[in-house]
Image (cartoon, rainbow, N blue to C red; front, top):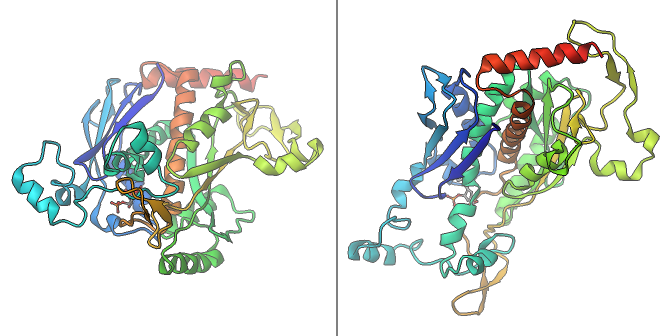
Length: 402
Ligand code: EPS
C-alpha cells in the first residue's frame, strides 16, 4: 500500500482536515513536531492580518494510540480560529432572516463579483456555475496548505527513522538574491530556522528583503520568490525509470507545481544545464573511501543532477528550487470586469499577505517529504515499522556489496 492523503476545508470554514492512509503500524507520532511545522508555516515577514488570528495546532482523531500509528487511516484536524468571525458569511445551513439582515450590514457579506487577475476566480465561477466568487476562492485559498504541512510532518517523522531529512531555505525574494556559499547542510538548516522572517541563510540579504516587502506593501503590491528544498540520506533507487509516471523527478515537480502559487521547479542545475556542455553538467563517478559497512562503493565529484538521474535517486542529496509567483490579491488592484454588471472595475481587494514566500518554502519542504515517503514506502513498504526496517537494512546491505 502506498501513502495516500486527501484534504478538505474552506479558508474561513470551521476547520481543515486530512485523512492519511498507508502509514505503517508502530510509527512514533509527535504532535509537538506537527505543531512546530505548522508554526513555521505561519511565520514570515509580509504576512497579513490573518496570521495574527490563527495559532494552528493539530488534533488527531484516528489512527494513533499511545503515540504510535495503528496502520489505520490517520485523521488530522486543524481548526480555523477565524471561523467565529465567519459563521454567517460561511454558514453551512441556509441563512435565517436574522443572519440575512446581519450580512446585509456586513461589508464582507456581499457576494464577491470582481475577479482578481492571476487568481482562479474568473475561470472557476464559469466551471462551477457560481455567481459569488467566494464559493470558489475559499477552497482555492493557500490556507489549505496547512493540512499538507501536517501530513508532510508525519512523512518527515517516518523518514527520519531511516536517516532521511528534508530542509528548506529561501534563495530569492522579488529581485533580492541570497548568497549561500559553501555552508554545510547543518549550517543551512540552523540559519534558516533562526530567521523567522525569511528562512534565509544570508544575513546581508535579509535587510534588503525587509525593505522590498515594506516597499511592496506601501505600494499596494505583492512579491514572489524562490525557495530551495534539500533532502539528504536518501538511498539510491527511490522512484523508477521503467514507467513514465513512476519517475521521481516528474512526481516531485507535479506535486510542487500543484501547490498554490508555484510556477516553476528546477532539479539540480535545472535550466542552467540547457546552455552548458555535457562535460560541464554530468557528475563524474569515482571510487568512495567507505567509512562504514553500509556505504556504497561509488561517489560523485559534484551534484549538478540534484540527486536524481533517470527518475531515480542516486544517493546524492536531492536539491530542488521552486519559483513562487506574487500573490494575486493586490491592495492597488489591477483592472477587472464585474461579473454582475460586465462593467470595468478594480479587482476585489480583500485582506491578504504582501508575500507568502517564507511560508512557501516550508510548504514545499513538506510536500517533498510526502513524495519521498511515498516512494520510500513503495520500495520498502510493509505493514509495520519492523518489516520496513528489515527491508531497508537488507537493501542497504545488498547495494553495499555492489
Ligand atoms: C489567502 C488569503 C489570506 C492569507 C491566506 C491565504 O487569508 P485571509 O483571506 O483570511 O486574510 O492569509 O493564508 C492563510 C490563511 C494561511 O493559513 O496560510 C488566499 O487568498 O489564498
